Image (cartoon, rainbow, N blue to C red; front, side, top):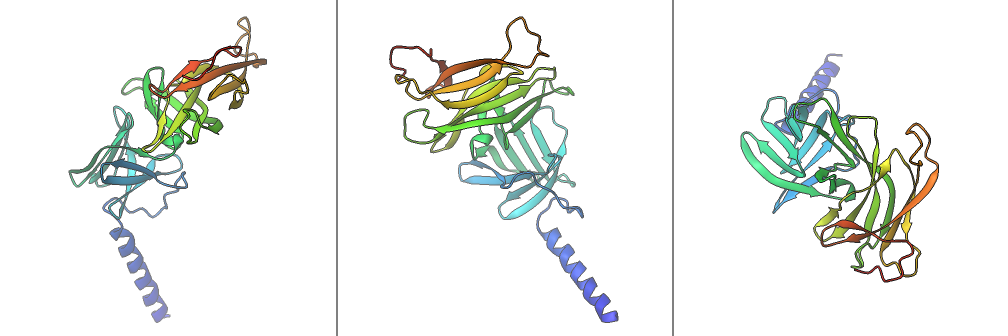
Length: 272
């Protein structure tokens, strides 16, 4: 029995030493449950680091230069800020750019997300919205408890939107601004050598019922996407379930990443 106790003690000591060595961030007994299958990578020049968020985004694991640091969410006037328990490691992201500070040294600054279209930056109502795993949350005003929440809704269509031969993505985002409204936006993510570039959002409506997103079958439409949804008539209250079918035909303008509206019965060529 004495030998067993000694063996258990050695195993405990080795385990503590291993986890303490993994990083300067705090070491917790309870495991961090991450909500993304893969970490989100931020890059700038030849520098990069990755971050993986816990299920409710109150904690995060940062990996940089072969080390892992466990951080906890911290109060921030704007953007998302995470700090290790001893304050030695700080991650901060604001308007699509991130920085990483370790032991008082800014090791990475001005980094942007390297990833898929759910991690790109989109323009909604004139404001940049940086998605992280299809989600963004920001304060209406600094210090406000009211949040602006932007989410990936879905209905994605993978197709070539700009004629370069690469697959781009058109899909729908929702945004809630603290009231009862849920606003639906048509967006696109253009596939480039540097990653996905997000478009401006086209407002489809408030509390609508999205249907399909498909390539327009009109013979004269070139790279035109049709967003189908159900809406209400103008004299119906918002409590009435949407039941009127509508469609909007949109074409992405790659130069400014804006949507151009195309008339369904347009007789000319839609190529720009």
